[in-house]
Structure formats: structure tokens, C-alpha cells
Image (cartoon, rainbow, N blue to C red; front, side, top):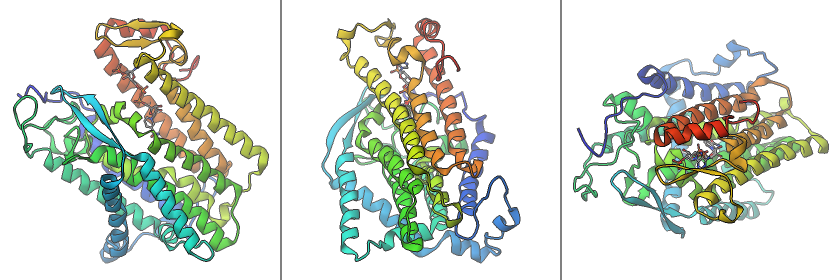
Length: 443
Ligand code: NDP
């Protein structure tokens, strides 16, 4: 057995059945979202006309092939993906070290979110001013090809997961710090079962040269596509129906803010579970490239359809902006407080904390005295602000807060297991001082 890469014994998501179920279920769900909110059919209230929904699907295998493998849509997506890769290489940025890996080394990451965001905005503005009436064919293309793009991003994420799984077996060109040519695998993705490991992610940090596939996918093609999909909804409303509603503008502003906040603060990701612990397999590849842009944009897609048009009025807009601001404040200031505390920047405040035998301290004061994951509560409130602009026309537009709440609870239980194993008695002491998991006095 390799010392560097212990065999994984614990399996997430009920092991293989869960992995297969998610691999089939989640892509089906984003296809379902495309079917229930488009110009041919839109969900109304709680009624779903399954006959009408399913009649939109191809009837023959040739029609399926045409839908999934549309050459123009594939070409457009590949250009999008690889232009972003090229920009990642050429755009300037600062270099930062990642977490210390099991072989004692740290990877170097290029952080160029500012240059990337500025470039995208500059290109959009240039295209906007180039055209006479602000009509951008690129945005119409996205709007008109939602189903095909949903399928392309899904198939692409599947193939990318196969690619990284295969290269996880290829020995490194140069020996690692242990003097072997083994790659560092994820502690969760080395069971030996090919389907499970492909799903959960076998290699921790798959790279081609210095290009880190995982960090790139987390913050570039899917996140920025989400922003463009939202924009395409606004663009479509204006050019097809001659008006833009405040609900669609609000969604664009709130989610656009979140997207660029994420891209501009990308170094924060270097200490998150996704980068430090999770391997890169189908779960992250699909989550980043397909699930995120198509699930997170559902509210904008729904609201842009003429039968769902909704005008909120100033009062409602103010309330929703207030919820988003509160959520963002909790999310941002609690994450910053933990990060500043760990970097020793808050010594003057003499915050209460628990010294652990590993050397790190657990903060149990300020935000981190209110609950063990108060930052998750902030993030969840932000989610509510994204769903509320759709009014109360159908529960489907609230799918996001239900899904995200479940994800955060799952994440909290995983993190708790990790911290209990790492800190033992000191974690129990922390739990006594801070008993609530996410929502103070509730859970
Ligand atoms: P946290 O930022 O809460 O980090 C958890 C880690 O922090 C623990 O493993 C432990 O690591 C350390 N820690 C825990 N408690 C304390 C404490 N009291 N004092 C000091 N350190 C502590 O979790 P995540 O990485 O999951 O989330 C980061 C942010 O990302 C959150 O705001 C979350 O909402 C957001 N997020 C957003 C998603 C989205 O899709 N929008 C998805 C997932 C997360 P150590 O080993 O260093 O002690």
C-alpha cells in the first residue's frame, strides 16, 4: 500500500448506488429545468403538464443525436472554454501557494480574477457599443440554445471527468517530494472502484503543466456562463418584448455581484474543502460546468418568459436587496473574521478561542461564537434573495434554497467529521461552547 495515498474506506453518498444515482439524476434534473421553462412551455403554479413537457423531447435516436451533438453549439462552447483557458495563461496575476499537501509541498496558483473579470466586461461593453441598438448575437445564441447548451455542458463535464480519471494513473514526469512518481490522490477518491472514484474524483489536483483544472473549473467557465445566461435573459426581454422588468434586472444585479465577488476573491477558495480535500471527478466537474450555470440561472430564465413577467415595485426590491445585503454581510464578515484570526491579525481584540494540540486555534467568539458555520447562514440568506424576485407563482423557482440548504447541511456534517477527527477533545470543548451548527438557537 502506498504511504502517500491511503486507500479510501469511507464512501460518501451511500457509495456506488449513490454515485450512479447522482450521475443520472442531476443531469436529468437540469434537463427537466430546461423543459419546464422555455418559450414552448413554462411551469404555472404547481401544475406540470407532463405530456406537454415530454413532447418536447426528441422522438427518434437521430433527433437525439442532432440535439446533443449540434456542431455549432459544441464549437461555441469549446471556443468559450478554451479561450478562457488561454486567457488564464496570458492574463497577469499574482502567484499564491496552496495548502500544504501530504508530501509536504505546496502548489503554486495564479490568481488573476481581476484581469479575467475586467477582460470579460470590456469585451461585452465593446460589443455593445459596436452594435447599433445593443443587440448582441452571442447573447441571443445562448438564450435560443439553452437546452442544447445544457446537454453540451453535461457531456463535456462527463468527458472531462473521464480525462482526469485516466490521467490520475499516469506517473508524474518528475519525482515528487517522496522520490516516487506517484500523483497525490484525494483521501476520498481512492477506493479502487472505477465508477465511484471517477465520480468523486481520484486525483486531488489534476494539472496540465501549471494549469490547475480544478481551480479553473470552479471559477471560470461555469460561473461566468451563469452571468452570461442571466444577461441573455435580460437581453431577450428587451429585444423581443421591448421592455425589461425590475425583477429580471434585480436578479442580474444580485447574482452578477455574487459572481464577480467570487471571481475577484478567488484566493479565498484555496483554503476551501473543494480545493484542499476533494478530488476532481464528475461530481465537481458537472457541478461547476453544468449544474451551477443552469440551476442558478433558473430564476432569470423563468422570469424572462412573457407569461411569467413580474414587476416588483420599489418596496419589494428594497426588501430583497436588504436580505441580500444582510446575507452578504454575515457571509463576508464571518469568513473574513476567521481568516484574519487564523493569520494572527485580531490579537488586539483578545477574542476567546480554544488552543488545539495541532497548533491551530478554534475561535469561539464574535461570529464564530454564534454558530459553528454562521457563514453558511449568510450564504443561504443570499439564496433567498435570488428566489424572492420570482414572487410566489411556482415553488419550482425556490428549488435553489432547498437544494442549497441541503448542500450546506451535508457540508457541515462532513466538516464536523473532519474537525472531530482532527481536534478530538478540543472539538468537543468547542461544541459545548458553541452548540448551534448553522442557525443560532434553531439548528
Ligand atoms: P468554512 O469556511 O466554515 O471552513 C471550515 C473550516 O474552518 C474547518 O474545516 C476548520 O478547518 C476551520 N474552522 C472551523 N471552525 C473554526 C473555528 N471556530 N475557528 C477557526 N477555524 C475553524 O467552510 P467551507 O470551506 O465549507 O465554506 C467557505 C464558504 O464558502 C462559506 O461561506 C460557504 O457558505 C461558501 N460555500 C459556497 C458554495 C456555493 O455554491 N455558493 C458552496 C460551498 C461553500 P481547519 O482544519 O483549518 O481547522
